[in-house]
Image (cartoon, helix red, strand yellow):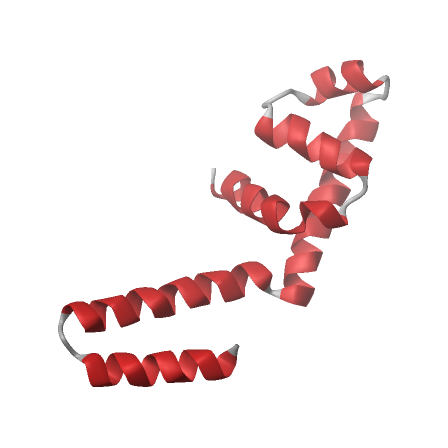
Length: 107
């Protein structure tokens, strides 16, 4: 289940960097929940060809993340903002301001 979520997140970020066939096979398999055989039947390709394309496409998404780290940076930013919100909830405005300044400097 965790891989499905990760692929979906990466697809949202990097999907536009894939070609149409790669986007389609990921969309059919992960978003529309079609089986490899159903995708093969719908596209006129063999099940093995679809399986290979799917694996290469997913690998490509992970390569993009390894190179660009957009998902990791997004998660780090979210965690930092949650920490700042917690500090503000606790009325620790000076530390919250300091963290915000540090965060802005990283951008």
